[in-house]
Image (cartoon, rainbow, N blue to C red; front, side, top):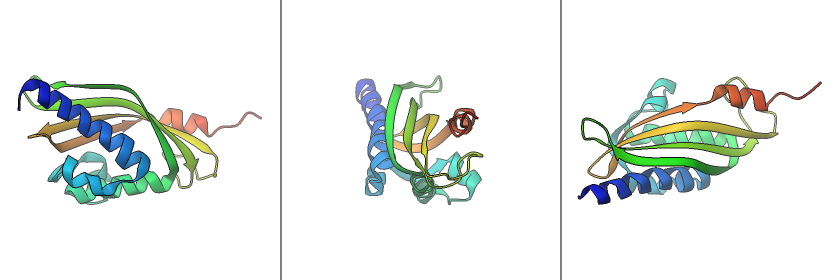
Length: 147
């Protein structure tokens, strides 16, 4: 692939993951986005499984914790790392109803917003490594109510 096609594919994979898989639960799209042996660092640490099945566990957990999320991508950039790897990063948020414990906030059936940065690394146009960092402070703060 040319660099322009690589960058477009990187952006497409991350955007599709967030807007269709996370927001709408279209898990069936993952085989066209992620390599079977990809590494999702969050899934590995949480015990949701390895490879693409771990990513499925990650998405299922998120969608069961924040019901009917509306995803907003605030920034998305695709490029190459200094070692030449394809990469894409997004700063994004998801708002929905908190139906499960989430980063120290108990399920309360109230609106909740998750704010995160997601890094994707790709090879041959497929996701091979995923790292997400959530802003737990914003999530916990959103659950507080004035006295």
